[in-house]
Length: 327
Image (cartoon, rainbow, N blue to C red):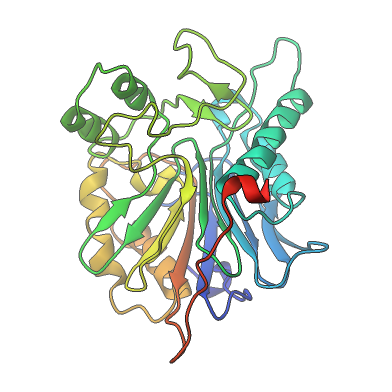
């Protein structure tokens, strides 16, 4: 991948190093258009995103200094207007004010979901949808995760890559209902790839009533997740490790016959990389130099967030008000 295709000139210092890239695909067979998207709003309020498959910039008004927001989106082309759905959500993320608690962030995003459902309501036409996996980055506290769909957040350390999100797919619905156990779920979700989805932004969810599509989003939380997944709710505060990097990516990176084997290569692939841009380049390079076996044509978007070491004598202020104090 040409270095010019990787965006990394963002203002996230001194806390993070961030880079992102998005492509139509990899290999000889590719999708006709890139329906993925991303959003980066840095600490100076400078926003980067895709519109018409091309990178755009905008200045977000009244954005607090040092606050950040990053997200990846995968428009659902099988339902029509996938690119437009992802673009609409990306545009909406630029209008949501900086948030400081999971509850505050969820309230704004749930409202955006309902607003865009009304916007895309066309009699007789299938409703479009998009995944949304994002991190809100307050200036003086820990990041906030918000997740819908089957894009993922990975923590990639020196020894292994660990998913920090639960895919919103039929296998997860089966796990919630107690129909499959942990080994079966992991085999179906991380040991193979299936294109079906059980929930998406704008589209709605098939968790609450599997036989029909319901309008609201269905939050996976310790209240409904099985014990072996309850540490991975969709909406939560994250504690980041300085010896790890964090990858937000769309499923084109594991749309292959043995995704777990490909993902297992990532720690060695990224070892020694000096910055987030190099990491993004290596991820795309691995897709280009040695296509994973059984790769399905799909769009590719990868955003790497690398926590930066604190200056000598420095400390991060992780103090945050309770949800009800801010709401």
